[in-house]
Length: 425
Ligand SMILES: C[S@@+](CC[C@H](N)C(=O)[O-])C[C@H]1O[C@@H](n2cnc3c(N)ncnc32)[C@H](O)[C@@H]1O
Image (tube, rainbow, N blue to C red; front, side, top):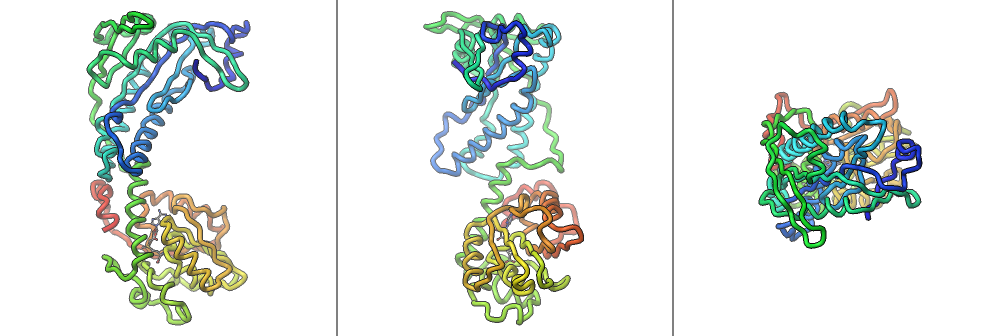
């Protein structure tokens, strides 16, 4: 028995109230295989394998639209169906669409795989083995009883059993489209080269099958403005955070950039801004410029420090805006957030609050800030447009943005953008 996401359309589709009885449907399972033979030994590998599967599943889900209906996600697979007896969508018209849709699944899957491979920046077992992931789709037509229990559609009958059994079969391939005979007869596949076969099961007997092996995908064309996959962002952020966790916890170590008091001198921070600040507040400073160069902040202003690190600029801002103003520092590195929080507590800066978050989704309400400052963080964020959109969202109309960061006056090649060493080194 399977739970089906409630579809408010079903009653309309079936005005005679046949909702609780057998209906003719075509069932599909799109199954991603290839990871099962790997044992992931650490949390990173487990989380990356889940993330990769999630990206691939999401890509397929986007293509499963009405009249296709999702029954549920079953781990690495999606179980879905379409009614064959729906008077609103005559089967003849639908069958052609479905054939095209099945081919589309393989295309979008291949495209996403190529994108994931291209953006691969991690060397864990899950990431190295992305290319072993394959898509198989099994299709069966038959009756099933659809009925409702509370808010859920339920589904029962032999068809759901048959289609699940077919996932375990005698084929020596991980990438194929397998139809049972009723499904094959329902679709327009005459131009496709299929292999006929039989699968035998102890409990349900022999099932005639028709197997189609999709053509190799067309070469992948990468659009440089396309959003990088989530796994790329997560890996990049993890690597950047690893580096800045060291700056927070072991500031005395040498880095490939200047830090601490020496850096404040190089960047022209005024002595009066640093007066009475304990060394602990200054030692992890890692800015790339001076965000107070365009002008000091005014008493009473609200300030967001995006990528605040250990909070030196937050504390300087806190003094400038005084009791009537407020400062929110945002950083994604736990150790920096912790250090900035301790630093503002040490300085009894009650108008400073430090929040964990990313520049691309600032944990700050709309139009809260008179000024957004940011020092050396934007260059570390790959989705720069999203960052600037966030600055625009949180700053009041007529507000200001004071940025100091690294500027490059030439386009950066895509290959360099995907080189994690260049982001952190
Ligand atoms: C070069 S340090 C500068 C820190 C601080 N502004 C300063 O001047 O000391 C960059 C900081 O940005 C943070 N960071 C980098 N990318 C980020 C992102 N996408 N979202 C939030 N913080 C980020 C890092 O964790 C790090 O603390």
